[in-house]
Length: 153
Image 1 (cartoon, rainbow, N blue to C red):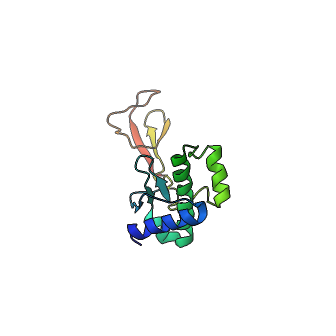
Image 2 (image 1 turned 45 degrees about the horizontal axis):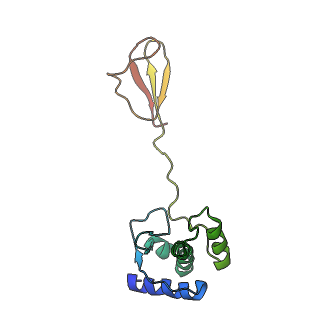
Image 3 (image 1 turned 180 degrees about the vertical axis):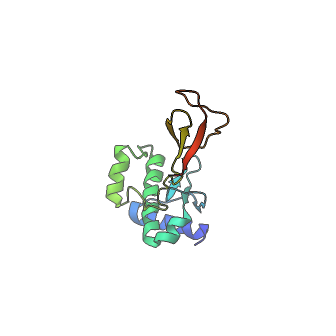
């Protein structure tokens, strides 16, 4: 789907669902990572994440467009267009728009674990998330030398 086809689809959904014209542009933006789309306040354009269309299809795309059109029409009318505003939440329910889009990427977990350092003199252990230079740092209790006991547990 091209940007021109996307703009036509947005205009069609705007006319059918909201009964109002869409006079700006719809653009695919592949730099969007965590969101399905966004409404740009200054240019009044709507950007859509192409990954959400590729992964979930036309139905998800229509939901994202309806959500962004809620922002669009309320902003142009001078009403509350933000997620927390009453006008926005009411228009979402009236138009059958989703509040959130489907998840594009799973949350990344910290797989690095931690590094466990131990003092040679007093055997005090120091768990750390980030590696440290054992030649530069000493034990805080007895100022003894440290060595790496376990890595990425």
